[in-house]
Length: 117
Image (cartoon, rainbow, N blue to C red):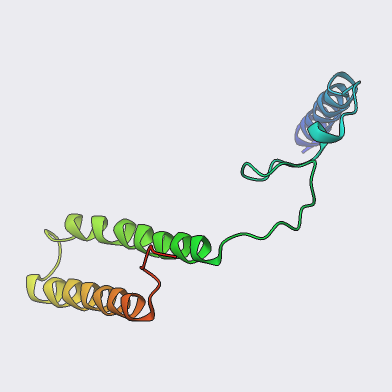
């Protein structure tokens, strides 16, 4: 028990020394407003951060994320084909793809997939 306590203290001291050294050695000497501000996807950080952006771009990005996650869910289904009942596997995949197609038609009818502005 004593060895465990000593080892915990040694680890704590080493971690504290490493954090203190990184704080001392990693301190930036030059303070530049542009370098200290966060990078925001190509927007100029010297201007106001309240610049308007396209809502259509945001909607297309959300739709892309939805269909990207869908691919991540479909690919493992191929691996489960061998170890599952074929009829249940087929129904499950059919329902999943049907839900995705219904969502795609809904987005299409709402006009979210139109690229013209």
